[in-house]
Amino acid sequence: MTDVLDDARDHRHATAVRLTEVTKTYRAGTVEVAALRGISGDIPLRSFSMIVGPSGSGKTTLLNLVGCIDVPSTGTVEVCGQRIGELKDNALADFRARHVGFVFQNFSLVPVLSAYENVEYPLLLIGVPAAKRRERALAMLEAVGLANQSRQRPNELSGGQKQRVAIARALVKEPSLVLADEPTANLDTETGAAIIDLMHRVQSQFHTTFVFSTHDPHLMSHADETFVIRDGRLVDHKAGAVQ
Ligand code: ADP
Image 1 (tube, rainbow, N blue to C red):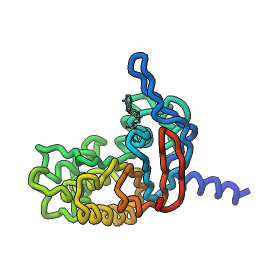
Image 2 (image 1 turned 60 degrees about the horizontal axis):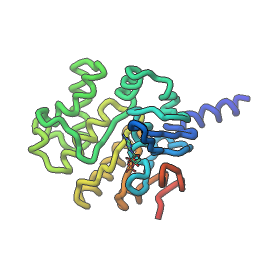
Image 3 (image 1 turned 180 degrees about the vertical axis):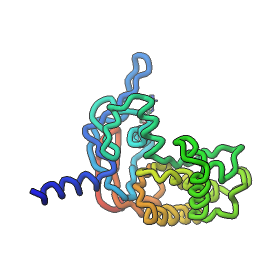
Image 4 (image 1 turned 180 degrees about the horizontal axis):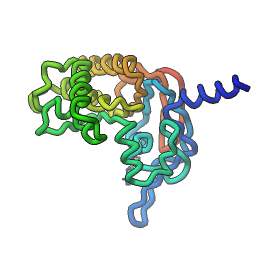
């Protein structure tokens, strides 16, 4: 009996995100677009998981659901055991602020804030006291190799440095899940490779689950799990990278 319970517990803890028959239909007036048409699958805890597929296949829609930015039309999305469709707007925003970090291809840093202030900001939003904010923001900047650039503003940083700040900002609240939409798209090959190495290092340090949407073959080759979607359907899901 204990074994069965332990198995169930292990299984539950081993899954960061569970998708069950998820559909998403956008409505604009009388026009309906079925962006996701019944997606099921588990994203394992502490994995480097990739969502790949052609433009328009539904990758961003899926990331928005996994990132608690939106809720499914039908089916269920469970993030860290929480069904997100059951949360009202405020509760969804609060859940997202605590559990999910985002890295965008255009970095989305606040231009008038320094690197340090950009990283500290998510902690302000969830009410972390000042001394703790400072300690964690400085530790994260150190972890991404930017301890000496903490006072610089985004326009004084290179593309790779901006992406490092964005990664530090995504990780500073120690979220269960970090989502990255094409995180290497605006970086040259060498900088992109350095950012992938950095994400691997922070993953083993902070035990984060990373979910990427990407076209970048180099990033795709690092996948622990690959979800291939086409026309809103999961057409392949395998452990490791798609060759
Ligand atoms: P991808 O990220 O793979 O390019 P998306 O998830 O952005 O795909 O889009 C999937 C489909 O949903 C596309 O046909 C797109 O035009 C449509 N779509 C995405 N967002 C909206 C929206 N807000 N309103 C209407 N249609 C949308």
